[in-house]
Structures are given as C-alpha cells and as structure tokens.
Length: 119
Image 1 (tube, rainbow, N blue to C red):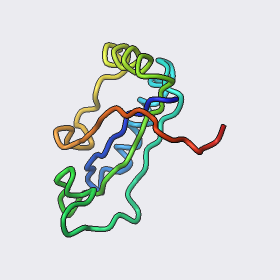
Image 2: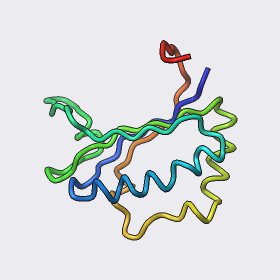
Image 3: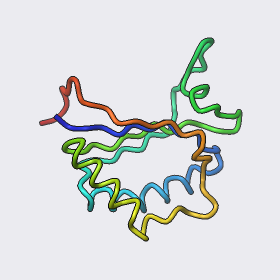
Image 4: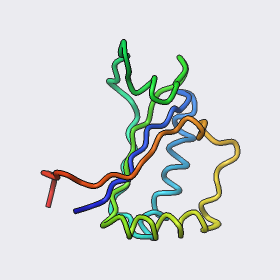
C-alpha cells in the first residue's frame, strides 16, 4: 500500500495565493522524484474546538487559516529517497518571504491502513 506524508500548516489568510503559488511550483518536483499525488486543501469548514482542533494544533492566529495537505508515495522507501532528492534540488529553494511560519507546521509519515479510494 501507499505511504502518505501528511501536513497541517497555518497560513495567513492574505497569503493564500502566495502559498498556492509555492505549492504549485513544488508539486512537479515531488512528482519528478516519485510522488504519486500531491493534494493541498484550504480550510473551508474547520470548526474551532474546546479541547483541540486544527487551529490549535499549529497555534494558528485569528488571521490565519489552516492548510491540510498530503503527498502519496508508492512506499516509505520511495518517499525517503524522493524527499532526499527534493531537498537537495536547487529548484526547491524556499520563497522569500515564506508564505507561512514553517516552525508551526506539523507533519509526519503514515502507513496506509485502509484505502477504499479509486483503483
């Protein structure tokens, strides 16, 4: 089964287009280095919780929204190899200024347990 990199990112609402531009620039590199799919989602119906929520998970401010994104890889091995190549590629240079605070981004790699999606 596929291996998934998942992300939750606080993005200032007025930086939505800058974030999308940066993501659109990076996506082809991920595909070039083995990713099967890259999905970026802008928070649209994200409730504020009393104990925890997406906003609290990244310490988002009142002027920030959350992006929920994931990258699908064929395997963890492909992901590890692809990520090394992506981070070493000069084309992956971060935009200046960054459209979000990367220190508050949460991310991780996940083994697929169930996939009832398209085949």
